[in-house]
Length: 170
Image 1 (cartoon, one colour):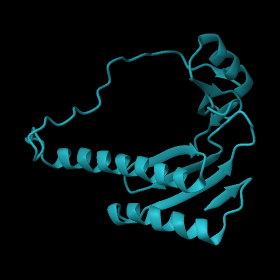
Image 2: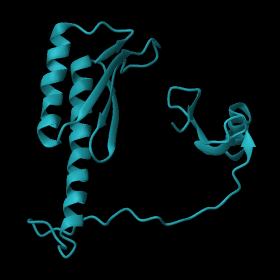
Image 3: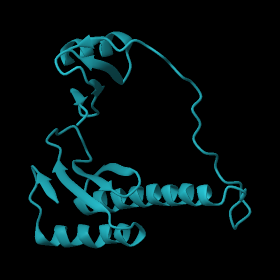
């Protein structure tokens, strides 16, 4: 657990561990990283931010919640992660029983996510700054490019907090 611009007291630490413990009971051996921070902008009402990344044997779960109180942010974050875990477990269960069409309550199961469009484009070599310019030109939230120096495929993306992020393969 990390605090960025906020002190993580023992009381907050134990509260977060107790709430996140619910996830540990639902997932086999998850690795959970929680980061608490405080927004410094006086215009932002929900200043207490809780962000978590949960590494599982399956997908990586991520969530971000903010509110006026750090405990409320943690509660909202855990609720969101629990919904993600439930979706993940239901999806995994449907794969094991492909003939099953409805839940125990008789409702229709939600459909598997479907790819509805495929795009192909040339991945041109460029540096990250050029990729950001291309991102701005096309007006998308992300842009895929080949790094001119490393020859690896990278992604630049627009961050919620402003600025840009760069994803590089390991």
